Amino acid sequence: MPKIIDHDERRSHIVDVTWDLITQGGIEAATMREIAAAAGFANGALKLYFPSKEDIIEATYERALGMMREYVELDELRGLTALRELCVSSMPIDADRIAAGRVLLTFWQLSLTTQKLQDKYLEHIREWRGLLHRYLAEGREDGDIVTSTPDEQLVDEVVLINAGANVMSLVAGEFSTIALQRQHLESFFERLTRPS
Image (cartoon, rainbow, N blue to C red):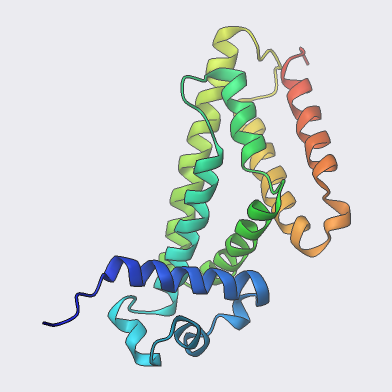
């Protein structure tokens, strides 16, 4: 009787291996040859599961996003409380989230030259910005957010704080400690709750 192959399990294993290679050695370590060797496949066999390296990186990026979503508990939250939860949970404030940030950095690098990956990232950013706008609007409706700073500018600030924290936690951790990240976020939230 022929052996039954679980293709989803094999794809997941390839993503696991790619994740480890990226977090330990960056994108340079995650060559098709190294991914295949670490996953226990012949080099060409990867194409049975992922047509290209970009597809493997995209799946690994999706894994990182999935991890981040698991950290965010937004059920029944709204307004300022939901905004705070979303912002704090998506920062690189522990080892797992810092590792996810390394995968994100790799994805950013490849998206500069790969339209499909760039489109994927822009889709994520639009979704994230949409949530930020929604919670800001709810916070204003509830009377918790009173700053006169336009919501679009506030959304830009959150995105830049988050992207900057992810990069700095990887390349210059002493300038992006968890305490500093929390300090920046607290300063941001304090400004939301006072007129300006």
